[in-house]
Amino acid sequence: MTRLKIAIQKSGRLSDQSLSLLERSGLSFAKSKDKLFWFGRNLPVDLLLVRDDDIPRLLLEGVCQLGIVGENVAREKLLEARSRKPKAQLEALTLLDFGHCRLMLAIPEQSDYQGPADLDGKRLATSYPYLTRQWLVDNGVEADIVTLNGAVEIAPSLGTADAIVDLVSTGTTLRANHLKACDEVLSSQAAVYRSPETLDEEAEKLMTTLLTRIEGVRRAAESKYVMLHAPRSRLAEISAILPGAESPTVLTLEGQGDRVAVHAVCTEQVFWEHLEELKRAGASAVLVLPVEKMLA
Ligand code: PRT
Ligand code: ZN
Image (tube, rainbow, N blue to C red):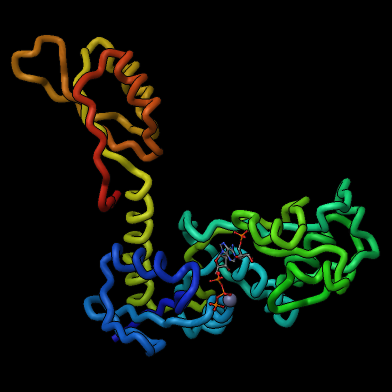
């Protein structure tokens, strides 16, 4: 019987949300705290819990068929693999809207930065040498790269580098080290990646089912079910306000004359401003409900 393997980060910033996404997609596992392998109980899909840096390699080598990892790590490791195997491929199937961060060029607070050309002949410390190199080449800059596996942000104060390229989310770490971000190398979030290895028909079918569910969970998280009452004469106006809604369902309200009930799935965020606008357009009894699952 065909089984698929999904790799996720064992413990770190992406772990909880990766596991929760899979569980909301209907997968359940025989969990074991200290084991790296969790057996899939209800579907032939098992989990491999590893360091995030290992996930791209596991996919490239076909050990796992799916993996959840940050675009920063996937792209860095893909470039690294391509330095040995130019045709290496890793495809991001779905962006997951968590693990957001930016790979930024940062320099000491007191330094000036006009543009990438300022880096000519300088030394950059980073844990992302391949992405940094590509960015330098794209910008026609020649600079030295010092690869460090951690504590990149202290390199300028130690004198080992003039600038750094590192991940930033809130910017607290940069500020604490008297650095300022001055250019973006990559904007990143967690994504589902698939192995380039071809699968047999059965495995491919299972993969499609799983990806449809993951996509459904992701879309449901962004979607809201909106119900309201409105005058029939203003339906077009009301529909135009509902964010990302396609042809709402319109139901007659018994004994209410011109007023109808409108139900719609909004696939974009519904803000208070939208509700206020709906009210001005004659809507009443507006309810916004979460959507748990979606299957198109
Ligand atoms: O052990 P393992 O190798 O699996 O984990 P790890 O330590 O390499 O990774 P982890 O868990 O720290 O991050 C996993 C992924 O989360 C990264 O590859 C990114 O895709 C994503 N991510 C999102 C981040 C951040 N935000 C982030 N802020 N990864 C790292 N950081 C670092 C940043 O470099 C800085 O040093 O967190 C520090 C705090 O950031 P500020 O800007 O909020 O101060
Ligand atoms: Zn890591």
